Image (cartoon, rainbow over all chains, first blue to last red; front, side, top):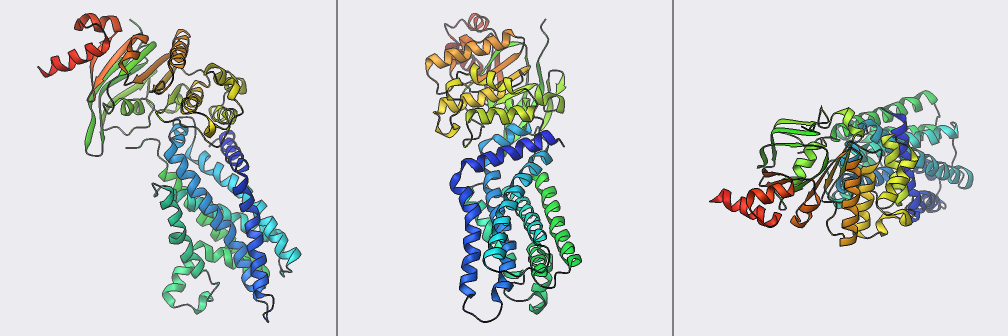
Length: 245
Length: 237
């Protein structure tokens, strides 16, 4: 591992994103608009529906967006030959992966800061725990999305396939994360599956922060999400090969 | 006897169900060596083996006295793939700066590399908006970073106009005069005369090895294309 190379990769990825104004604007503005839409939708309903659904949405944005962006960009690296070139240079696999994780983690931090600011400041989302912890959960979540995106890009040969991994990998996690039906109320098999999916823990952490705000619980969930991210990065590293057939 | 920069012995490479290199042996010394042969004869596979990107079945590949692809070689070998492996959404300068940081070479090296492929004026243009020939020159510039001891160039002059082609061959010879070895592949036989030494390749084997003059004399042909035909038809007879 080499910090210079990791930072070189992260810097380059950020330059690429910065150059693509439309992507950058969408990354930052769309989550704010969607969370506002959610608030508006529940505005005239009784109860605190926004407080129930808002946190889950804050957990989903960084995960989904980073998953998509990473799987497409790494696929591009694989097919354009830049990855092969980098691996003939003194580039460690971890340098490459951590560079991406760093760049997209940073981007996710900005994205989440904006979405949290809108939710808490403008829309009146009640957060009982520390707001910065909300941001941290979002960043860990984004790193998870990045790590999974890197992993699945190894199994896609075209950008079309990479995009299809989104419904295949991400939608089941959204359905089973406890947003629509509390996890305890699901059929046993689904609850067990839900326990194995990382997004469930990310949503748990967010909901805990808004609800009882037991920080120990939050950290436990964040730990599980981080564990999934590290495991996916390790698996992703295994799919990067210097020598290919 | 000049020291070998590349030594390949009995190399076998299988891709899919096809034996692309059925046991090839060759040496490359300093200077500009041309690897010439028709498309699909295994040039790219051989070059990938030299930079350590190709999975090998058997045999050995040594570069600068080390096993190909080993860690010490990663800053000493420059490699240009057939398609331009650079980032289309970055400028020429940003591409070069990034790869220079990965290699750990000074920033001036990036400026020098851009100048030596004649792209100084396009430095701040986004690579995706350049012409095909310009893009492949950006890719070549990346390979020049840090003055490697061996340059492995997979068809770097394909599709370029004659003036540029002449200039690039001039550049290859200047690099070789500086002591590096340059291995250039091409399927265009008329580039043969620009090389110090030639390796003619067909169906995964080397069918001739020598200076362009030597090969012409051996075969009694007027040019390398004739010599190639003579060798192929001689082998078939």
